[in-house]
Image (cartoon, rainbow, N blue to C red; front, side, top):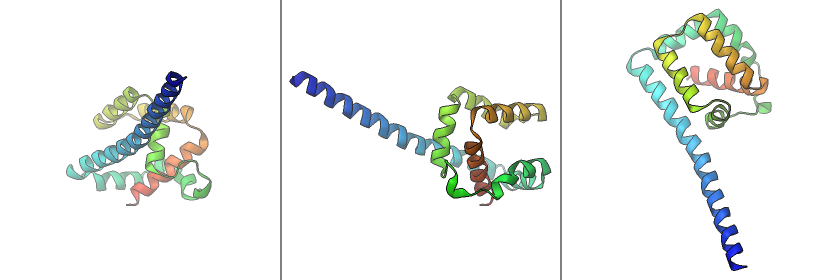
Length: 141
């Protein structure tokens, strides 16, 4: 009987440690990713041009239009950390690395459309709207 209680206690402790690692790990990944991207864009002087390009692109503005009027209280994703968790559940790390490489080297409009279709097929409408709202928030900083 002691063995079973010890085994159950060990399993509970391991589950708590893994849960905490997942929770705090995704927060760390979100912060690290945003810091890395922002630092790269700022150091290369591309951050302002990137924001200007997005704000001046009518296709992007049309795509983000629903996010401007969204009721934020009803969205399932409210923070960057939550967004990171959702994206990590829906996409593998290798897929995200491939996306980063493509984005850094430049993507054709066809590749952008394929990416958009892939994202839309894996995320719910509410999740996608939440990510759009978070993207608008980041662009307005």
